[in-house]
Length: 343
Image 1 (cartoon, rainbow, N blue to C red):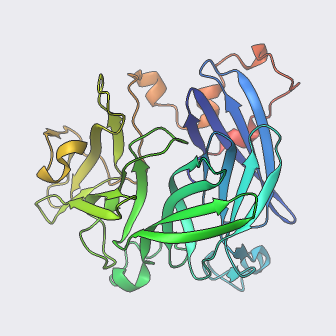
Image 2 (image 1 turned 90 degrees about the horizontal axis):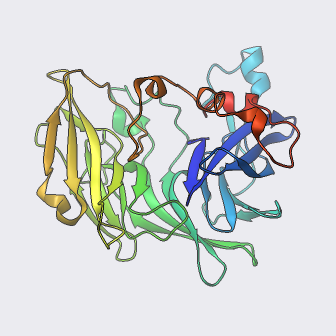
């Protein structure tokens, strides 16, 4: 599951996983900004390959593909890789919605039989009680083994940006395509769980499957796309982060921040684009003294972190010095093992 955390308003939600003989169980723990535990819910899943989760005002939202993993074949050696051990399970992928207050969950089939819904840009509740989810849809599962292939176009599954509308009460859904451009690692211009105006993702200015070098801006309402790609063909953007403009009355106004790696020079730079003049290119370009290897996931924080904080590598290290023994909640003990592995 990617990522293992989300932020909704002032609350931090951590997701931890555990395996059962029947699939996987996911626990959501919700904390205030002073690290007080304020809620915890769990959901049973049937798919090993749960891709991502999101948070709305009412729900935790989980996507699970219609795939299962044959662990016995891996242990016995009859199949050599995770991808070989995958098999279809059921007819469709599913959205699992978990009520943040009661813990009640519902599974809703997606009307998509030949793709895997992966990373979620955002999800939010609609006035009519339905849930909207904007996410990346992949033709098939890829564990990264095709990313260095000489035949990238055929070995890496094609991906696109889609909108999933889920009627929770009727347990029905529909999926529409927002962009046919090959893309991944989406972020939005609003906080998690609130309606957004634009989605930013890694992409190229084409539908062809190729290593993404630039950043795409998608308007989901109009289904329009704008793409900025670095001038040099040796420069590759990392996943974008959205930084809101301080003092702006427009909540969607901000800066798109990405680390650009140059494969010819071995150097890295930070490119900053203005959301309002996106296609004009960076308004700021910062050359870094040290190379930053090509990366994928990213996030923005207005907080300045100390070197000590920056060296913490997972949720367990971040939380273990926050006064766990002083938590005043209805839980007698909080297991840390679930947070020790970042998904």
